Every structure is written in C-alpha cells, then in structure tokens.
Image (cartoon, rainbow, N blue to C red; front, side, top):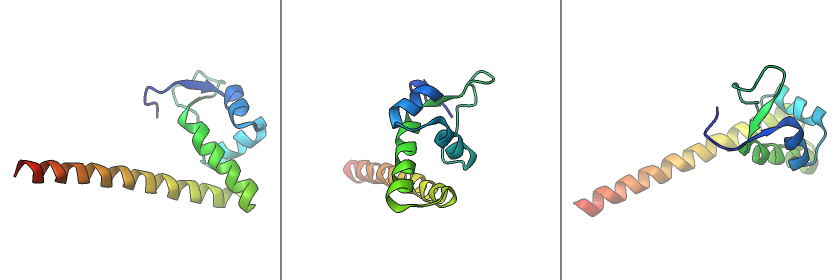
Amino acid sequence: MSTGAVQITLHELCECVEIPEDVVLTAVEHDVIAPLPEAPAGQWVFDTVTVIWLRKAVHLRRDLDLDWVAIAMVIDLLREREALDRENQSLKERLQRLTDSA
C-alpha cells in the first residue's frame, strides 16, 4: 500500500540494507515485506518504510538466529503494536481536546 512515500527499487533496497537480493526474496516469500502492487510487471518497487522493517528483520535473523517464519511473526507483532500505539495516542489527543473544551 503506497502512502505517497518515496519508492525504491529492489536494487536500491538491497544497497540500503546491505543485503543480497536472495534475502529480500526470502523476506517477501514469508510476508515480512511486500513490493508495492502498482509496480510495473517484472519490477519490484518498495516504499521507503520497507527499509526499516527489513533492517529489523535482518537484525532479528542475525542477532537472535531466528528463522524466517519466526521473523514474520515478530514483525507482524511489532507492526500491530505500532498501530496500537498510534491509535492510543490519537485517543489520548481526542480525550484531551474533550476535557479542554468542557
């Protein structure tokens, strides 16, 4: 899903994270990351947020020696936590506005 962020190619992603293409392919196979759906046929393009998640995945693999299935589960949980943190912050702001106007 594109959010208007800068897009990068597969080659650029590999350079940013300093990994070979086969690691990216494995990460895609395990749904750790996903290319943007609007990319031209045969050319994977990613948003720049993918760099952050792929770096986390690579660190989990290297530092904790996790397999890719476990990495996918951890990344899913981290994404869910991030979404809950954003929702919590939004609700706190709404509550603050309501209490300020009362």
